[in-house]
Length: 257
Length: 382
Image (cartoon, rainbow over the protein chains, first blue to last red):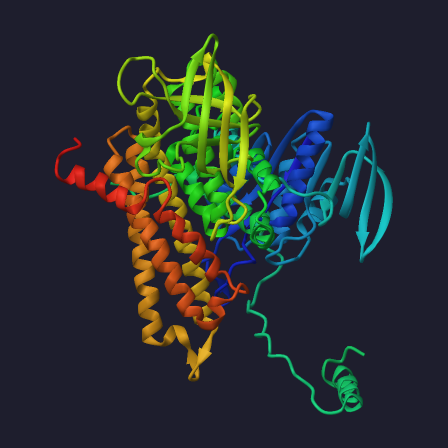
C-alpha cells in the first residue's frame, strides 16, 4: 500500500506565543508536529504494519521542517519529503500549499493520503480537502476510525460529537480527529534508525510549478492574541438573589441563554 | 570546546521531556501517596528504549553515548527523581558491570534482557555494617561444586524486590589473599535469595529500597562476575558512572524545584507586587540559577570525559558533590519561596526537598566524594 501523510510543522500551542506587528515571534517559540498530524502519522504506521507497503510523510516549508520530518521517521515512517518553498518570494496561503501538494501527488501512485483535521496554529482545515479536490479523489474529514479491506473502506467520523458511519473506497484522502488513536512516542532506537532513512528535498521546479502558480489567494492583515482572561466574578447575598443575578448575567452579559 | 547538543540529542530530549510531562507527571501524586513501584512507567520507558541507552546495540541496547543517557536521567528527574534513580541504578550499576566485566555468555544471557527492559537491574554492595567502608562487608560466597553458596544481608538496595538481577558483592577465599571480594550476578529467582523489608524513606517515594537476604543462596559458578577477588574493582569501576548518574538526578531535582519556585514567585503577590520582584527573592532565584548552571557544566563535563574514555573519577566526584549540594540548597530555598504553602503537600517544593537529601548520601556520601577529590588534588590517586 502506498501511504502518504501530509504534515505541518507548527509552533507549540502549550508554549507562550509572542506576536510582534502581526507576526509570530519564532525566536522564542518551540516547534512541533501539528498534533492532529501525529494522529495521521500513527494511523499510517498502523496501516502499513497491517497491510504492508510504505509510509511517506510530506511537508511544505523550509529547512527547519526537517526536524519534524525526522521525528516522523523516528516514529516509524519510511520516507520523508520536504517541498522547500523558502526561496519563493510570493506570499503563501492554504491555496499555495495545497497547490504544491496537489502537483506533488499528481505524479505519485497513492492508495491513501492522511492529514490532520486542522493545524493548531491557524485552524483553517483547508489544505487536505483542497488536495483531495485537486486530485479528484474521495475525501472524508474528522475520522475517528478507519478500516480497509481490499479497496473497500469503512470509516467512522466525528460530527459535532455524533458518529457518522461511511463506506467509501481507495484511493482516498482522510483527515484525522482526536480519538482515532494514541500517537506513539518515537523510541530511541527509532531515532537512531531515522538518521539513515531517506529525506528528500524538492522545490517548485521539480513539480513543474512557477511561483505565480502558487501565489496566495488571501492576504493576512493582522494577527493578535485573544484578550486576557478576566478574573471570575463572585456573587454575594441570599441564594435567591444570587440565582436571579446569575440568570441576568448569563442572559445579558455572557449572552449564553 | 563545544557546548552544543547534536540534533539527535535534542530530539531525544524533546521526546523524554514530553514523556515526563505527559506520562510521568500524572503518576507522581500516586507514587507519592502509595509509595508503590511504578511498574507501568518502567515498562513504558522500556518501550521507548530508555532502559539500555548507552548499552551497545549488539547487546540489545540503543548504542547511544553516555552523555545522552545522562541527559535522559536529568530530564526525567525534573519531574520524578524516583523514576530517575530507578533508571540510573538499573543502567549505571545494574547493567554496566556485566557489559564491562561479564563473559560473552553472561552478556548474552543478562545484558540483552536488561538493556531491552525485560529485566530490571540492581546493585548490592551496602550492608548493615558496611556502608562507606565497602571492604567491611560480611556476606560470604563459598564454592561448592558447580555453585557458590551466598550468605549474608544487604541493605538499602535501590530497585530491591522490583529488580530481576542483582550484582552482589561477597567475601570469597580463592586467591589466598586477605579481604578478597568477588562479584556475582544473582537472579531474584535463585533458591535462597529473599527480599527483606522495604525501607520507608523520607523521599523518593515509589522507588524501592529493600533489604536483600541470602541464605545458602545457590549461585551457579558461571555467574561469578569478573575474576575471583576482582569484586572491589568491579564495584569501583562502575561507581564512577553511577556518580555521574546521581549528579544528573540531582540536577533534575534542582531544576524541578527551581522552576516550581520561579513560576510561583512570579504569580504570588505580596505588598502589591509579585514576590519575584522583591530583591530578597530575586537574589535567591539568581543564586539557584547560577548553582544549577555550574552543576550542569560539571555533570556534563564528567559525562563527556566518560564518553571519551578519559580519567573521570575526580570529575564524577566533583559533579556528584556539587550537584547534590545544589539540589539540597535549591530545594530548601524553593520551600522558603513558597512560604507556608511550601511546607504543605499541595505544592511540589517539599517533595523535591525530601528527594534531594539522599543525593548527598547514596552512591558515596559527600564526605566520601571529598576524600576522592582530596586524594586527586594531593596527587595520591593519579
